[in-house]
Structure formats: C-alpha cells, structure tokens
Image 1 (cartoon, helix red, strand yellow):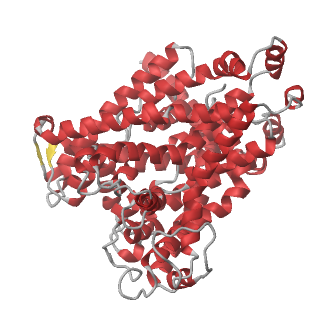
Image 2: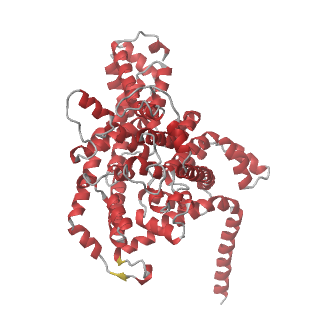
Image 3: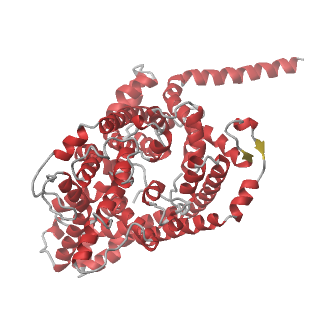
Length: 291
Length: 315
C-alpha cells in the first residue's frame, strides 16, 4: 500500500476528499444546529437565525428542563431500563450463545432452530401487546426490559464470535476439573471482552432508543421514557400530554427548550460512542458475510 | 414374556442414557435456560395470539370465550380499500429505498476506500456511522427543525432566495422521498461497514500490478474493487428483496400526520391505529398475520436464492 500512498494526490483525490467532506458536513449539520440553538441565550434567540456557535451562550434552556419533574422522571426511567436492560441482555445473550456453540449438546439444534425461526417470523405488534398485558406488565418499565433482552441477530453473531475463540484453553480448564459454568466465567468471558464491549453499546443504544413499545406499553406519563417525552414535546407541538415542560411555565422560547431536550435525549449515546466505537465495526462483522 | 422384559430393559437403558447425558451437560442447560425461557415467553407464546385472527375477539370474554369465525376477517381485509392502499404504500416506500438507499453505502464505501490519508478516512467513518445510533424520535425531531415552515432552516434559505416556502412535512408528494432521505442520512454510513470489510480483503498487490499496467483509478475501481464486493452486493440485494414487506415503522408512525395518511398508511401503522387505539383486536391481528406471512414467504424465497448461489444465507 505504501507504494500507492507515496504517489502524489491527483484531481481524483481532491474531488473525492471534497465530496466526503461534504457528506460528513451533511451528517453533522443537524447536530451542530440543534446544539447551537439549545445553547443560545433566549434573549438573543431569533427563530430561523442560525449560528454555528451561539451568538451568546446560555444554559437557560437546560437549567429549565433539568428543573422539571417530567424530564427528571423520564431520564430516571430511561437510565433504569438502559442499565438493567443492557446488563441482563449481555448475560442472557452470552450464556445462551455459548450453549449454542456446543454441537455435542443434546437439543442444541432444536434450540438453534428456535432462534433462527424468530429471525424470519414474529408474532407482531398486537400478540406481543396482549402477552405483556397477560403478564401484568403494562405500565411497568420491566415490559420494555424483558421484551428486548436478546434477539436472533445478536445471538447468531455472538455465537460465531465464541466459535472463533481457541478451544485449547477451554479443554485445558475442563481437564483441570472446571465445570461448564466456571469455564464460561473464567475462560470464555475474559476472552470475549471485545464482543462484550460492542454488544454493550448495541444493547444500551437499543434500550435508550425504544420508542414504540414505550408508547404502547406505558400509558401512565410518570412511566414515560425520554423518547416518548421528547416526541410529545417536539413532534406533537400543541400537546401538553401530562408534561409540565410545555405550557405556560416556560418564559423561554419553545425552540431552545425543545432543542435542549433533543440534545439531552441523545447525549449519553454520544458520550459512550467514542469509547466503544473501535470495537463495534469488528463486532458487527463477526460472523456476517465473509468478503 | 422374556422378550418384553428385554424390551423394557432396553427402554430403561435408553432412558438412563438420556438421563446420564442430560446430567453430564446440566450446567450447559443452566447457561442456556434464561435465553430459552425468553424465547419461549416473549417470542413463541405470542404466536398463540395469532389465532385471534380467526376469532371474533372480545376482551371481556377473553380468548376462550370468543367465537371462532374462520376467515371472515381476511375476507373483509381483502375487500377493503385501505388494504390496497397499504399494499401500494409498503411497496412504494420499499422501491424508493431500494433505488436510492441501497446503492448509497456502496458508493460511500468506494469513496472511503479510495482515501489514502488514514486519519481523514477514520474521521469520516466515525462521523458517518454516528447517525445510526440516534433514535427515530431524535431524527424526526431534527427533521422538523430543519424542514418545517415556521422554524425550519431550509425554508429560511428558500424564502431568502425569494421562493415560496415548501410544505415538506405535510405534502403527500414528498413523503416517500422524505422517508428515504432520512434513511440515507441515518444508515448509509453504517451500511458501508460490510463493504469496507470486503474491500479490505483485496490483495494490495493487485492494485500495484494494475498501476504498473497503467490502469487509472477508475479502472482500478471497476476491475478490482467492484468485482471484489460483487458477491456481497448480490447477497445483500437478494436479502433486501426478502424484506420488501417490512417498513421501518417507528419512522413512519413518527412522520405521519393527518395530511399525509394516504401515502403513509402501512400495515404496522394500521395495526396500531385499529388494534391499539380503536381496540379492534381481531382486525389488527389479522393484518399483522397477513404481513408476517408475506414477509416469511419473501424471506424464505430470497434465502433460497442466496443458497442456490452457493452463499451463506441469513440462516
């Protein structure tokens, strides 16, 4: 490659670089826009006026949002489902996927078949809703946690990752008298850290971002998650849907508050992204189509 | 008599053997148990509820108390106008996505692959992957702020240039294009990962040889890079065709409004409106089951084709 890299940049390169820079700009523009407005001092905020850096900085919108109960409550609910959900997801997915790697395990093919079938067919919105209702989980945050614990796609990728681990260590541990569980705990888990990192990101993002299930399973606004709250604030602009965020309490321009709520709804994702991003490209490629 | 005792003994042995094997693997079953339980309760138990499509479901009478009515709901569904509307919208949104979204990651991956400056490449990748992690609520909210007529920055530019503001969000003619544009913005970058991985597998010596032979950059792309990712493209295309009954429906439900329902109504949004908001459970389940079966058939067909091509399908 160094042979090629040593060559001078041609017009091809310049055009390519310029186009990519433009694409990146389009990718980040909405972020910059939302950030900028959310930090703009309400006194100088003029609708439709756009600055890359706020004309005058202010945390007024954030201070306001962070002082409302509906936001704090939704934030607490979302953190709860994300943390508990991601931990349970990792545990359940890795233990199950590990068992699925054991070809000698009686019933393993049946279990694998049961996983794969859910990839091509699922019962759909209403049967799932009725199940949650039957289980008495309506209006409970556990409905969101339990219904998203794992999925066929993750199980299959984790399984191929675990299959790629060297089996010698496991065999040696078994000869030393380790049971399946202690082999899993002492050998397999430490070797799986890159995959665990990637899937921690995937599962946390999935829980953090749940919208539709939260909409139909949680009817009481005290149980709302951030996504549902932001939706009611920004998209149903005329609704006050059980929230003290919109309505007469706000002397601040609605736009700065709404923008700040969007930022708060995505900021935790943006915070963990840099730390886990070197893992996820590897994570998503594990066991998928080999080029 | 003796024979039956022998048989019994043999059965006992088989049973004992099975028992021994199960005991031997007991800890492995313990590891598998939570996942298996999840599958049974949250993935398979609801399938029982699909039978409601053949019942006149009454929430007060419950599942057993409701009457069987056979295919009545299906007959009503196929004779209703909204069914054909949903079918058309599902198909149209997917065709838009197939034409405009599907090639996106391929072009972007080709462009990224041509970048020699490692830092620039990595920075670009980090930026274009990022929108994938945002929720649809955030993406749709951002779209509102960028496109709406009262606060949208795009309309600001349009009016500044002396044109009439465009009603992006309430004009049915723009709806499918808007969904596709959001999809491209959110996921085209993420989609490059699989192609970039395939491109990384190309032996650099082939490019060097091509340079020695005087091949231009375009020729290198055409004769080396593209053939290297062709199998990936074909497989992903066929698998994509298997998803033609699916719509990213959180996106649709967030983007829809009373002015655009003629183009936004798809099976899942209908299930939500009819089943959850209006409480007509049986009708909703019927629509969901219909969609599920069409989806299943399409996926099985596409997977069959992929396997015929000698590739690994999704299962």
